[in-house]
Amino acid sequence: MRFHKIQFVVLLIIIALSISCTTEIKLARSIQKDMNQISVLCDYPDHIILTNSLLELPNNMSEEESNAFYDSAYSNSQYIRYIDDTIFLRKFKEYSKSIFENYNVNYYEEEDIDAFLSSAGELYIINYKQLELEERWENYHDKEWFGNMLYEEDFWIMGLSLNAWIDVAKINDTVEIQRHLYIESVLVDEVDGMFFQNQWTGDVNYQYRLDSLEVSDVGELQYQSADEFSYHVINFVINKEIRDRLNSLEELEPMNEWFLSPGSGRLIPRAK
Image (tube, rainbow, N blue to C red):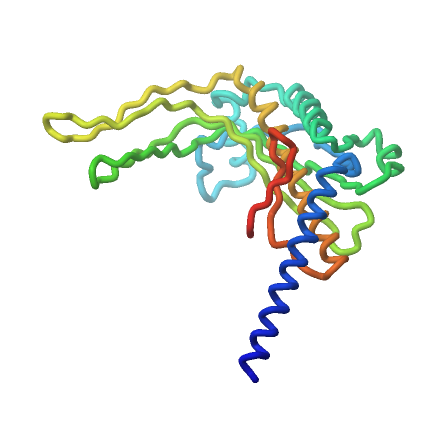
């Protein structure tokens, strides 16, 4: 008798999970179909922080010494001292707007707050609390098998990263006030490298050619960062909507993380 009770409980769990999964898929399809029912108001900082992290800040420095160090690091930077953060921010905002709208999400900025608040559907405030353009070292790693031996190569290359601290809050959300997100978008030196083995000695060496970053590449980072940040935010909003709606219907947690396909716009599940 006890064995049959256990079987019955397992059967109930399987049925509950099946119903939950079916409901979750229906919710995802509904959101995908009605992306234009999501509106975002993006709020940006007045400027972008420019940081040279190639040099490590010494310990036990006074505030005055730290300020002098950062000023010197900026003046001796390879890239950021040539970048106009006002132009960068303007292009970043323009690209962000086009990317949100490309996914059929309604886009607003601070001056449009009345229209935003009066719009139908789900409303989200995306507050870019801080944006930092950072010049830094990035680790490059390559590996290859020769027979039963694995050869690896590591070295440092230059990177230029836009770092974002973002608060996401849904209007009239009584469950979750806001969520803090941190996202990076990085451009790096391009490495064209390969391992080769000396056929006479058997020694394996690594050779590479470096295509170094140029100041002009900052235009690529303007678009890349806007694309990656907007995509990340949209996916966060979609998963929150699925989670909240599923919870209100059945008090269950979703079984998947959902991601928009950049090519087709379809929502793709990934098991947690």
